[in-house]
Image 1 (cartoon, rainbow, N blue to C red):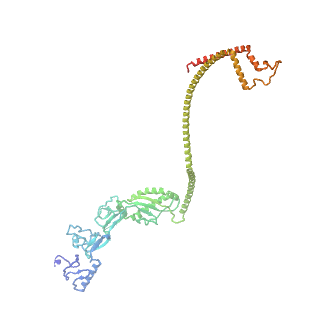
Image 2 (cartoon, one colour):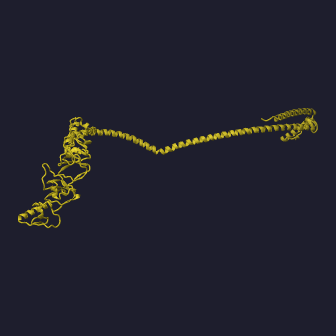
Image 3 (cartoon, one colour):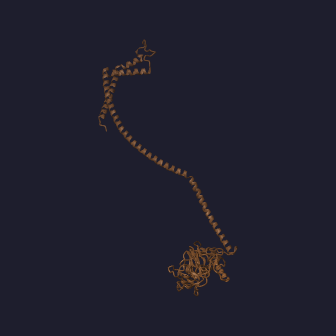
Amino acid sequence: MVFLKAGGSRGPQRKILREGSYAIHLAQFVVIAEERVYALALDKAEEELFRRMATLIKERDGFNPVVIKGHDDMLGIVTVHDGPSLAQGQIIAPTVGEDPANAATYHNSFQDPELFLAAGGNRGRQYQALVEGTYYINRLFATVELVPKTVIEVGNVGVVVSYTGAVGTDLSGEQYKHGELVQKGLRGVWSEGLMPGKYAFNTYAGKVNMVPTTNFILKWNKSESGEHKYDENLAEVSLITKDAFEPSLPLSVVVHIDYRKAPLVIQRFGDIKRLVEQTLDPMVSAYFKNIGQTRTLIQLIQDRSAIQQIAGEQMKEKFAQYNLELQEVLIGTPTSGAPGGQIEQILTQLRSRQIATEQVETYNRQEVAAVKERELREAEQRARQQAAMTESELSIVVQSNQGKADLARAQQEATKIQTLATAEAEKVRIMGEGEAAKVKAIAGADAERAARVGVAQAMAIEEQVRAYGGPRFQLTQQVMNRFAEAIQVSKVDVVPRVVVGGGGSEGGGASGNVMEALLTMLLSEKMGNDLVGAAAGARSAEAAEMRDNIRKGMSEGDKPKS
């Protein structure tokens, strides 16, 4: 009765019963549980109705709570099947009754349908999503769909294109007419991207476009593509060179997008792949077609580095017009697309020419290497003889030092000898002067002695002569002495063995004896007088001469010495 008085209505109720025991009048209420239906059916049609309702609830897993596990990284998108409909043009019901402080409208994540309706909730898919937890929701009132969370990896930014919300003011300015850039929460492209992380973003309410913030490569090559697959539909650029060759030029372009400009790129192009295919591909192809028309094939090959540098500088401005940063342009080798073509023949000729050039360089290098090898051999031989050379050099130095030492020694010896000679000469001079003085003194003494001896002899002889009776007798004596000595030395017989007689005298006589004749002659007075006179004269002269010598020696001996 209270249920009816409170305005209760017939039909399925929004309120559900949790675990427990309830005293319910089954004639008025039907309780559908997982194991059975608690009801008092009045006819078979009601039983069939209750059975279909139980089947529907079971299909919606309405007998179990909604459990969202944390490790699954899922979130629940709620679709409400009761309440007023959405306004025209709305596809997502706005969030209501999410403030816990307002008890009159807080429906606790759709677990209290009455409060949800009281808060102004509408039927349909709800913007509010369920995160990890357990929710007891009436599946006849609302169903829950689990979808993955939005994950923004490092090196990317998520640009949100919101399908719901109020219409905001375009932030891109009057001059930029490529869509609406609005604040976060409004309908349009959000001006702030989602930074790396996990977000419980309702993917039915909007789209998150992943924009790489790291450098990515776009390859104009059929057989290759970058990691992000933005270039999977790109092919080599077909050129027509100045000399009418038609090569295919492979390219690689390194691009960077500033995370702050990522919303502008998405606002203008929708996504990166559309940007690459509809804008960058035509622009890059046209640029290099123009380059190819101004150069021959060989120039295109040989000037690749210069073309690459110029292209990088010029294309940076073009990329900047699309809010892109060009980092590098890399040009590959032109190909003809089929083996054995004319381009391959040109390349073969160039390779042959380069091989010839390299051979010339090789021969020059070999010549230099031969010279270096010869120098090496000479250096090795010089190193082997280095010991002998060093020894000879040291020997020369030693001999030079020895010669210098000998010279110094000889000079010292000469100086010594000179000094000794000078000393010896001085000694000899001094000794000579002393000896001369000695000899002179001795000579003076001898002269004086001789003089004195002569004087004494003369006086003695004079006395002897006087003692012998005069000079005559003295001379006779000396003659007789000398004669006796001569006879003794010559051994002549004094008395002859044969006596020859003469004059008729008997027995010989004194006249035949030599001795007698000599004695007679010596003893004659006349001879005696003459001899005595001569001897006296000689003695007198000799005595005079001796006296003069004695006087002279005595006078010289008395002179002072120098």
